View 1 (cartoon, rainbow, N blue to C red):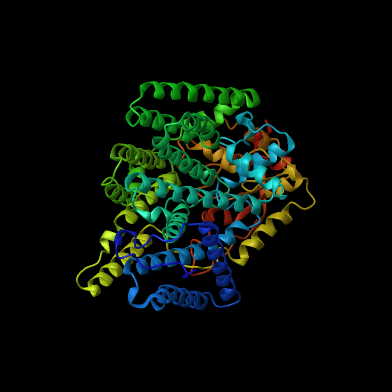
View 2: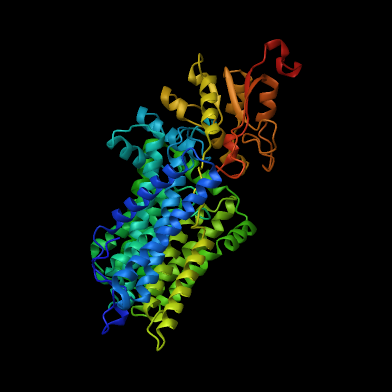
Length: 610
């Protein structure tokens, strides 16, 4: 870190103790520093015993964590400021934790197959469809459409194509990480804007050290495993989080100008957000309420609502023109029939409590400043967002719905922390007391970060056996046309052959839980033995993706497979490291695969031959 700038406080302005030179080049510097440390971790751990390698990495981290504030203390001597020392400690800690994340996520990002989670196959399938001119949404009997709007898939493909990568699984995942870093950057801008509204005289917004801390910490929040586990996967979450932070930043900037351009940006965001993820439509209500309460202008609220409604109508009309009724079936009907469990949502609230606490505590601190009405409105919108996200997370066991609200909670926490940092570490009669207070305060924040899930052990995320597993799947396709081999999840093989495959497992599962699916298409194709091979995971398990035991009624697909196909082989499940039991987000897709081939006609049950 560059210590040539003045780090000590001006005695006339103790509230500016941590306000240094303007934050030019802070964000790329933080990313480059964390990336360099991630490469150091890789070099330290390569070819070594995992436990010993982690211990060596821990020693390196401890050395850096001590060395940075120590260098500041040696440089400034008696003029050293405890508040600056504590902030240096927290910033260094955040960068080190970010390096550990980058090391771990690199294994996921460059994994060659697209089944790290349930959405990846459909995500890549949409990109493949677009690249060959195939409709993104078709009749449900085909079982090859995605339940999300196409914005994230199409933008990801565009960026990959512009970078010269085309259809590259690794490039697609790296782009998700770029979305996430951009979301953390905009979240940092939100911290600065909140402080400028609440405490205009506070220089933390212009401090390179505060901005470094905010960006590193918010990037950790944006990737936390509790509520943001899929931002590096091929899923709409990363871009949806970026869009949410952009919407929040527009909202925070509007009171300062009340310009028509900001109002127009709000209106445009409504259809744009919908095309990224359907749930972002709720911002139409948040914006309208904010304009009515904060701006005290019903005319502007009505004008915004009319413009947003018109643009949304045009977007929906375009989607209907391109894909017809199937678009509305997949993006509205299917999701609209997913049952929500309030009890599960309440369980998620208890698990995600640190983010609720973070937003509440940060809001209390910020609301002590100026522009209380504006900031209270923005804070209540955050509370409404994270509350609705928590409720809708009751659809499934995963908590990724709460991700954007969690990042917004981080914004309130860190901006609130900056607003009280100097007063909490203010000079006392006894200098030792100030150093002790600062140390306790900084350590308490670091421990709270651990409760938010920001601390990760830097271990290899995916073992060698996972690559063997991928190669075994690919070998089963050899000598057979790709469109004659049905793999339940994973599109990378079909992308190589430019084949749009029907009857995919995740597509079936998305509708089985609500009991609204029509399975006649896949059942008829199985009965006709249309596929030369079928590869499925968990055929005899209760959680078989084609016939899940908790569905309100059986799909009949398992029995159809048993009646018409015979087991001719197995692909052994990928073995995880003994010390890392949950080495992948969804180990189900690394489970044992049963290889099925058509039965001879004479071996069919008599009822099938009639």
